[in-house]
Length: 245
Image (tube, rainbow, N blue to C red; front, side, top):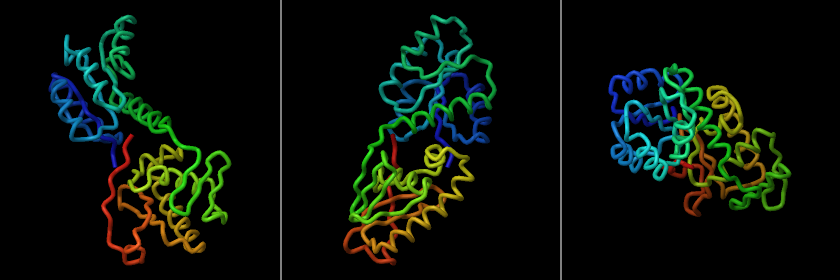
């Protein structure tokens, strides 16, 4: 799935042009014309990135940055024609994650946005040891056990299972997995299916029945602890909440 991107600008022509140009680079943009509208959107949706158009907001730009800084956990990119160093520093202090000089191509904006999103995902605090049902994983030593018995995993299988175990009960997007495993989304998506299949097989070989590793088709994967009455192969489909930062 594409990353959701909120564009904040009163310049409808500029916002419409940017919204049209970003999707080929993996972003699904939404446009609002001010801070209040942006705040309302952030209460309803979780955006992976926010673009603020300085010229499109005029004097209200810094107030918008401050308000978004308090309500959003996504990186804030400010697009500005200003090249004055002091003004850029002040915008960063008001909440901008990065200032990009206009004019800038959609390709450059998307590349910088994607990097900001990936840094946020990778820098999210991760535990070094996890316990999910009978599964124990130690990230420091790269080991996994099931009730004391070793669960033999490749490096990618370990990283994938650890990522899911850290967000037990919530589905994790393919884009998040690709960022964590450091590979293209399309390639990681295909290999992740194979990794999930092999992890399931290894869990079955160890007689594990209390863990459920599901594919949320077209979106991602989820690890959960089965309820006692839903431990069979014919357990009903489950709607998982999405993991968010």
